[in-house]
Amino acid sequence: MSSIDWDNPRLKVRGLRKHFDQRVVLGGVDLEIYGGQIVALIGSSGSGKSTLLRCLNLIETISDGQIWLEGKDISLAGIDQDLVRREIGLVFQSFNLFAHLSIRENITLALRTVQGKNAGEADEIAMHWLGRIGLADKAESYPDKLSGGQQQRTAIVRAVALNPKVLLLDEVTSALDPELVGEVLELIRDLKASGTTIIMATHELSFAREVADWVVFLENGVIAEEGEAAEFFANPKNPRTKEFLTRLGR
Image 1: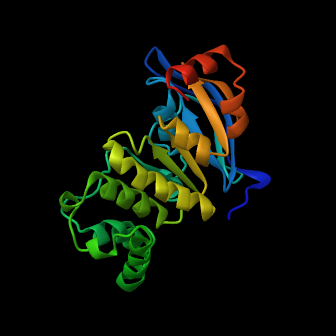
Image 2: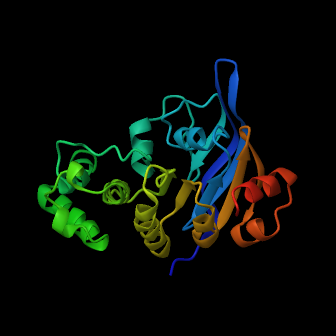
C-alpha cells in the first residue's frame, strides 16, 4: 500500500485566479497536494473544478497567483508548458483517444515522441498497462470497438504510462453508463494503491469518500471547505457544504 509523503508538497497553489473577461471563474485558490495523495474536488457545475484542473496543467493561462511543482514555480512567464504537461497529466471525460490508432498505438505515441523511447520499450510499457487493466487482448483494436469504460481506462493508462508526478482527472466517469463507472473507479483505486498522486474532479461522492485522502469543496470559484475525507463527509462545517452533500445524498 502507498503512503503519503508529508515532507514537502508535490504541488502548491497560492492565490490562483482565473477570469474570462469580466467573469471570475476562480477567485483565489490556495491548495497543497502531497506525493501519493488522492484529492477529490467536488462542487456544483460551474464551481470552477474543471477550470482549476486546466490551470494546473497550464492549458488555461492563469490570471493571477502561483503554482509550484516540487518547489519549482511553473506559473512563471516563459515556462516551457510542454515540459510541465509531461509532469502533470490531464485526462478528460471525453476520452480523446486517436480514432485512427490502435489502443496500443494510442499509449505508445507519447512514449515515443515525447519521452524518446524506442518502439520496443514503448510497446513493453503499453502491454504492461493493458495487461493490468485487462485489455491486453484489445491491444490492436481501435477505440470504436471498445466500450466507453474500456476507452476511458485506456485514456487514463495513456497518461499514467508517462509516469507523471501528478495525474489530473476531470469527471472521468460522467460520460459513462452507470454499469461502466465501476471499471474506471477500480482502476483509480489500483493507482491509489501504487502511490500515484491524483487530483480528481468528481460527482461520485461515494467513491470520493472511499478512495480520497482529502476533499475540497469548491463554490463560486473559491474553496468553501476542505478536509480529511472521512471527517469531511461525517462532519461538514460549512452550511453550504452540508446543503450540497445532502442534495447529492452523500
